Length: 289
Image (cartoon, rainbow, N blue to C red; front, side):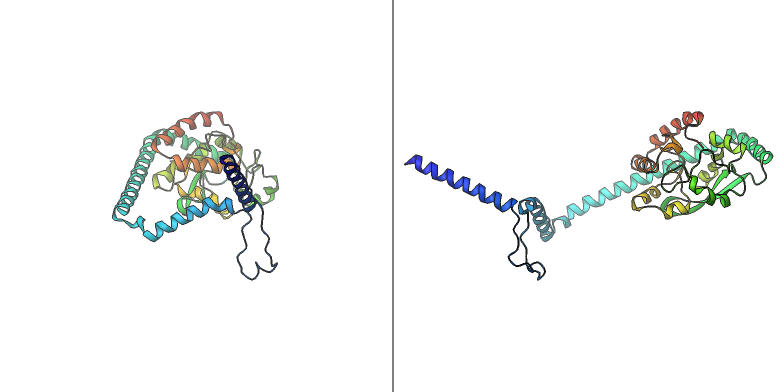
């Protein structure tokens, strides 16, 4: 008799399992083809897969109904967290700014003689001004004038349109290893990154930082996708992770990833590390053109 009851229970368990599997895995078609169009409820094909999501939704609705997130203790904890985050960001920003100004002012006695020699070489090599000012996009999309030593002929911008088909960079960036618009002195300046030296004045003014994402031109920003705009969440820099990771040899997608990585990890120690890594990158000239 006990054996018969056991067989009956086993049979029921097997039957229930088969029923659950059929209910979970077998799609149910509506009896009426127009059922869905009429707004009636159509059984889900895989209801078992939504069970976890339904449970989470139920918990969220319960929290919302009880408004437990609006307790005085929760609000106080949230305020303290936000206040701590804001204070930390302000301290980091002020330390970064003080470090930038201190390094730039300390380095001016050494960079000014190099700038003077460079200015004379540019003037003797080709007609045109010594400095080149270009509109760039900085933090939060604010435009500013970026200073560089002129490394191209004065008609470089007009000739760019006829060279677009020879672009060697990917996506929206324009780069050519043997750009015919670059002067003889300009090739040396670009190889050693001396053309970027006047940007120390951008740093002193506050438009730029020593370390950060390179500032794009407005045309490049107009071609950005949604995720690219995150580059503009930080103050642009003279050097950055992209410059010490291959410079122009880095693909645009990796370029964006490196900039976002810096924004996520930025700190004073990180800036010092990148500045130290910039020295061998400039000396080697890898990816500079």
